[in-house]
Image: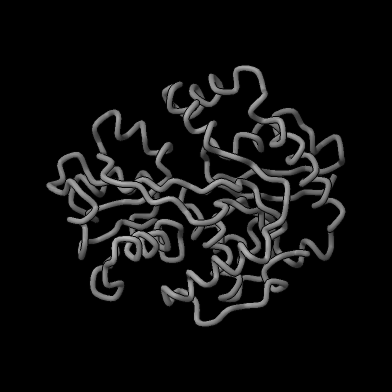
Length: 283
């Protein structure tokens, strides 16, 4: 049986992977797929891909595109979630800030440099018309738990993370939601190290076939909303809202989508030049 290691965030988007692993669907194809949770998100997964600690990752589109351009020897094999990710902009409940406008020039808490929370702070700053060089400052807090501890004690002023993942902490009074910032492109893709793809293309395609079959019918699984609610400590009404706005994909990113991401990263000075699509996608 061939071993493969895949990384992702421990969030509701990745429940389809849990279901296929639980049901040993990869074992039936002589594949031992092992999942690893990355609480630190995209920046942490980029490091793990570079180090060869994982073979594949379910990862934020803008983060992996930037890291491939910066030398990560991977390519995107397909989109996983094609709908935008809605980033909540949060402050501590005890914070004096009440609007996004008031956060201009304060410190964004980020999991690490190169992470989604880092890159999306630039997107939000541009949306708000801020001066990116003067009005953006950062405080590294590692992950969501770091933000939950740090923000109330003054380590960082605001924190951007997926809105529904943080909703329980808004409900229980640790954080307060002051705004939202959706991604202007499909949010999650599946990336594979080039070395792995060259050696095991057929097995990777089998893995994709299995997960795609599950995501294509995911919303029709009986009581899936109850499972998500229980597993991720979400209110049923929040789960239903999230399911209604989330769409999985079984297709590759388009050239136009890759161009849109790169143009945005370039305009924010997060990359130095546009890279040919074939350097980023496995076509």
